[in-house]
Amino acid sequence: MESEPWRKSVMLAEYIEVAMELARYEIIKDDDSYWGEIPGLQGVWAKHASLAGCQRELREALSDWLALRLRLGLDIPELAKMNLNRIGAIIAHD
Image (tube, rainbow, N blue to C red; front, side, top):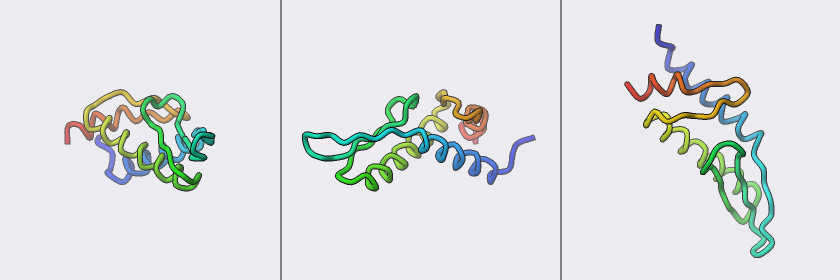
């Protein structure tokens, strides 16, 4: 039985929250900007003049990264025992 669309949305939202809790930030001394990344999620990073802006851009980068991987059926690393690969297969065939 296919899960309801709202369940997919809840799973995605939970995954994003867990991923954002794992984010690491640092100040780039050359220009006093902030760099953020999420370990284990290759290619998910952001840079901004402020920490809040970096967090906002990192969340957006993560959302875009997830959307692309789900659409293309690419593997998504498991976080906190959440596996989005199953819903990715459903979305790719919708």
